[in-house]
Image 1 (cartoon, rainbow, N blue to C red):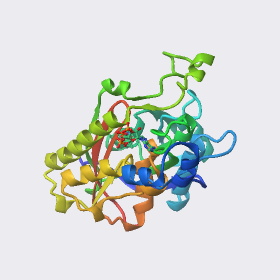
Image 2 (image 1 turned 135 degrees about the horizontal axis):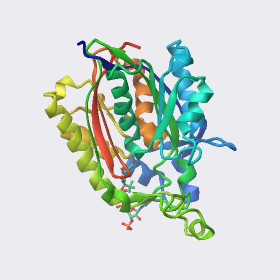
Image 3 (image 1 turned 60 degrees about the horizontal axis):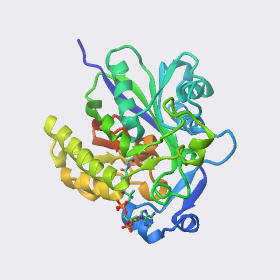
Image 4 (image 1 turned 120 degrees about the vertical axis):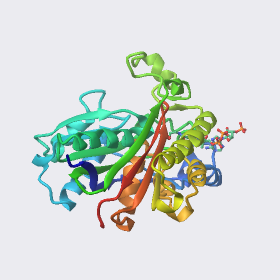
Length: 331
Ligand code: UT7
């Protein structure tokens, strides 16, 4: 039997027009451009403005870019997965809304929630449907409208997050390209350090939860930082060891964009030099499930067929993991 792999055959992305700069944040909270830049590497982030504008809008734009670039008929799309923790509504799934907007009338669709690791969890899940021979066109979207759950009076979180979405198309190949291997992990003990306390079934919205600011992201930053540094670096080194990949074999590291210092620790542990590290944190901040597809979108023109890419993420849950992708096309 011929081995089928899931190749990434297209990338799309969308970031909102509005730019929230560090200078502007200086007016909202007690912070400085210097503090934010030196502690995180972020200079600005995008914010989705406008009534009734949710994550589905951004995901739709990213998906439409792929449909146009790859000249595909949306009716041929079999499955749409949207990784997000900021769905338009608790239900129906944001993926359903996107599938309908893009005309993927023959697809089934669902959301996947794994916070900042959402895109890689979705990528691996989508790849399995291709590898099994079940489907031929799977869209994996990662995106978040973090501004909808951020308290712009909390300087420990509002400086980090931004809005954006990206998408990839997965198609079968019998060549040695595509999603090659992955290690995915989660640990529910992380709930205490990074969460949104209310608005779920445990604590539905009340006047009290709103007054207590419980519909915003809560993060114990320094604890999350320590777990992120350790786990993202470790899992990235693990996937290299498991597949006997040396630093010289790796063309690119595509790390979740949460903090430049976490990224530097990860690349350092892998022995990967800075010029091989994809980075756009300075202009988009942390878009949660959006960071990795937005990296692939920004770097697409520089990627070459056969490039070994290690994608790594860490996020709320905790969730983390690394994926080895062999790039399948020249842009
Ligand atoms: O993507 C999902 C996973 N999330 C992450 O990976 C985020 C991980 N965490 C981080 O990136 C960092 O912990 C932060 C960027 C959130 C914070 O940086 P830090 O170097 O860990 O700072 P800290 O929380 O240890 O705080 C150090 C000091 C504190 O002041 P004191 O107590 O030493 O007087 C904070 O109150 O910095 C203060 N501080 C700020 N000062 C100016 C915290 N936020 C700010 C701010 N501006 N925005």
